[in-house]
Every structure is written in structure tokens, then in C-alpha cells.
Image (cartoon, rainbow, N blue to C red; front, side, top):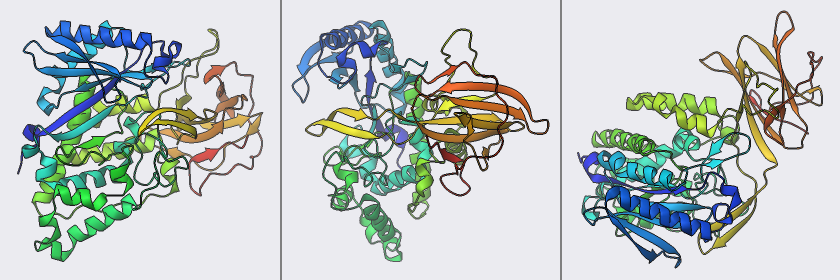
Length: 495
């Protein structure tokens, strides 16, 4: 069995912005501004200083200025280039054992240059930069690339990522769903503003067909599976979105000669070299597990079909965390070390509109993720320059102690019905979609037996902050609101 830890390489495209990114067009949507050029040069200079090396000017594929840096021995180390809305840094291919030592200088240099790997927002949260930030999997050389030497591993890997949304949604940042930079295979067809013309062949159908042929009895006797090659995979998926649209997650857009690498795009800007290591370690554990199964003659995993709830109940922090915990147990990986990514993707909201207002003690509000509503996309060739997002659509996740009752109100009318999801931590969980109409959401926590109000809070959807709550009493009756699906804990506010 090939040793993935000594053969599989990881390349990165890490992005940075400024703490007050909204003040300069270069860190909002544009590529080339004086401040961005100044910060790019500062980053290159600091990288050279920290490594005892040097840097030179060159041009990227779009003829924009970039800086190539070299370590003290003259070996290439980083390429500092520009991305719409951020500064992008490309790394050399690294083995899993090299990642932290080689990337620590990058984050140190960024800090010295006044750059940060996130965007600050007015209501107290930090998201990714929304620039490119990908993990590229391949080999240190074409001759040792395990994705070429073991092509069935490629099929098993992309199937596993599709079957487990918990491996992508918690890590990809806000650009979720159809039209995003890292679409699942079952999200391409839903995009009315497709980046490119629709593919001639459906990715899921093509993948399912290939898996079935590899798992057939004839294949087990030495036909298709044993004859599978990287070139055959490339040919098989030609014309499909998986291969033709690089905005897939993962993407086979660059799985072609001579490098044959997979681009894992469902990754937002990471905050440290250790975080980069954690995500690469997770990937190598997945691949090692699949490799062991395939070496034992196990069939390739088959594709799962997801219900409409994929973008509703299943695109929420608690269900994804439970799925991730269960998946990690199969790999003998401690899931707790990845909890920071879940807290970042579904951040707790605590900012208040005035100092005298206190956020609730028992009620927990988290910003949810939902497919973005894209109104327009500006392209330069196959590069997305900017997107116009309808920010009036939002999602909240509401959590409260299971022993307490809860009501959610808009304009003093009850807007919660049905049952709520309850997790192992004895918290109840409700997902609410709404439009930011400016009307406050009001919440009441009460003792279900005594009908006594324990806590009340008011939240402004327009400011995403807690505001002063009036004295509330429990409402009588129910609204006409119903779950989006029977048995669901997901609701839509009809405002």
C-alpha cells in the first residue's frame, strides 16, 4: 500500500485582507488599488526578512503585478498575488509533515504587514475573506502522485465528500449553495445565474455510472476497476460540471495531465498554520481509510441522494456537528479540535445596540447559513470579479435549554409552531429564515409548568444586534406558520 503521508502533497491558496477592508475598493471587489499593492509588497518583504531570503517582481496570468519569494537557500517559497477583494498567497507543494513549519512564517509576515485572514463585520463577527482559499491535492511529482497511481481513490474521495455535507458546509464560509465558489454536484443545476453554460452531462449521473461499472462483478474480475486510470477518469467526466466548472467542491477542473490534482474549494481563509494542518490531516485520514478499504477489495462507496432538507434542516450547526462527530469516530479522529470551524461558520450573536442592553443569558442566537441569493455575477474570462448578493435574506439558529419553553414573535404574533430538535447537550434548536424587513424578532423563554417568563430578548434583523426588549407576556394561540416540511424544525417567517 502506498504511503500517502510521504507521497500526497498539499498546495494552498491563502487569502488576506485588512481589518477595515470596507474602506478600500481593493479589499471589497477590485483587484488593483494602491493600498493593495502597498500591502502586497510589505507582505513579500516581511516573508523575505523572516526567512532570510529574497523576493522579485513578476506578473500573474492576468498580467497583474505579483511577488515571488525565496527562502535563505534560494528555493521558491511563496507567490504573493492579487485576488478580487483580497491578497492571495500561493504556496509550494508540501507534505503533511512540512505544513506547520513552512506556513508559520506566512501568518507571521501577514500580521507584521497589517493583514488579517478574515473580514470584520459591524455586528461583531469575523467571516472568511471571501477570496480564493483552496487546498490542492496531488503529488510532489507526476510519477509519485497517489491520485494517479490509485485512480479509484479519486472516485472514492469525491463520493465521500458528497455523501457527508459535514465535511464541506462547516468549512466553506458564507458562499454556500448554487452559484457559489464551491458548489456540490447536486447544486449546479439549481443555479439560474450559472458561471458557464450548463454541462452536457450531469456530474452525479456520470459519477454514479462509473461507480456502478467499477463495482460490477465483471469489474471485480479484472475489467474496469483494474484498468481505471487518471486519463480514463478525465475522459469520463469531460463535459460535466465536475470537470468543466472549477467552482465545484471538490473540483476535477485541474485533474488533467501532467499534474492531475484535485482542488478542494470548500475551505475559507484559515487563521493559522495549525488550522491548515488540521484540515489536511482530516483529508489524509479520509484517504487513508478509503485506501485501506479498497486494498481489502471493498467496493467503491455509492452516492447518497439528499432531500430538499439539505439546504434547510441539514444546513445547520447542530445536525452538521452530530454528523461530523459520527464521521470522525470512524477515522479515530478527535472531532473537538475542529469545533472552532463550526463556531466560526455559525457564529454566536452577542452584540447589542447600546451598552446598557445585555445579550440574553439562556437564549443563544447564531447566524445561520443558507444558499445565497445571487442577483448578478461579473466575470473576467472564467474568473469571478464580483457578485451582487441580495443581503435581505438571512437565517438564524435559536438554541435554548431543553427544560424551558420558548416563543418567537414578530409584531407580537407568535411565529413558532410544531416541534423543535433536541440534541445530546439538552439544548433545543430551531432554524428560522427571514427577510431583513427591519421588524424586530422577540423571544420569550418561560417555565412550561408555571407559565412564568424566565428571560425575554429582542433582536433587530436589520442591524443583527440585540435591542431593548419590552416587557413580554406569553401569547395565546398559534399563528398560521407551519414547518417547511412535516416533522421539520425549520421555519420560514412570513413577514
